[in-house]
Length: 452
Image (cartoon, rainbow, N blue to C red):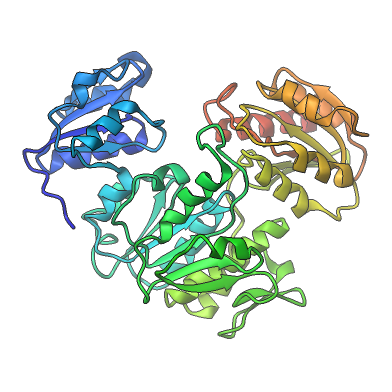
């Protein structure tokens, strides 16, 4: 259902990248726009300047009650936490929706939505590259980068196009009518428990990606996680990937689609780790459901080098390999990183820490007991990690910077080992983003090479 926006009183809460994109969209369609953010104008910088230049009213440095009154629509950015002002506005009958929901009202193309705790960006990018082989206008974005609202009104967003988006649980919290033709739930492990009351609540937010599907749509799930099937009531046709009975799975070391001729030896993939093999299976299945030819799927799989800061090979220095998985911002992702390197000839020296997200570090301790040599911790979560690893057989060091962490890890590693940055925490205590953290890690590693 397309919303009538001209002359409507609207509010955008949260002036990050997606919030600013929504301001542009609403103003272009004649809406009156009020912007609200807890940060002040100096902290928002260029975003506040542009929003003001577009004619938006700025209400910054807090969430005053009056700002939420006399509105026809409120659009909430994904980083905004639950606010009582939003609850009261909803009780007054004001629609409170996400940027994703707003975008979906103005998109006629099939939507491919990828969610899960880990692997979303890799799978979204793979599907996008595969679907570009169809020759149809294709938009790739969402949590991955470009806000989904930017697809509205483009060739990719119109009939004949394709819109492929990575969606976080935050983005899915306020969707009501968005319908994904192909929806993928890759996995669910403990994450964001600082925002959700329970793991079940977090999983339920992820499962909202399936809510509006019809029988002609597809719900793509991992074959080895039957508990995720229970999150879906009705809707799309369920298809499985990976495991022992997925339609696309590994058979005798070969990525195999049991419904078409796709056959790619796992050793031909350029992305590392067993979890990335599962990601390749998921993307290949989705692409086949969208009509991509098996030869084009295979070509993308063989050529895809992976994304920056996701199990990215950095360098080998003095016989030690350095891997950047700064995007492993939760314990489940860090464990998957270690699993993906299991069986290497050496041991793992792990660099971890940052902003704690409320889960247990016990799974990380268990995997490092098998595969690890040492752990270097840093950031706000360092004391928590030290307590979690107390009494283990691993060497344990604390660092005050990423450069110091790399130097300590290099001293602890032996020839044949792997130094792995898989923080299991978010980056915002010391860095602007996981990407900045990864960049500093890579610079420090290259600095080691210069000293060798």
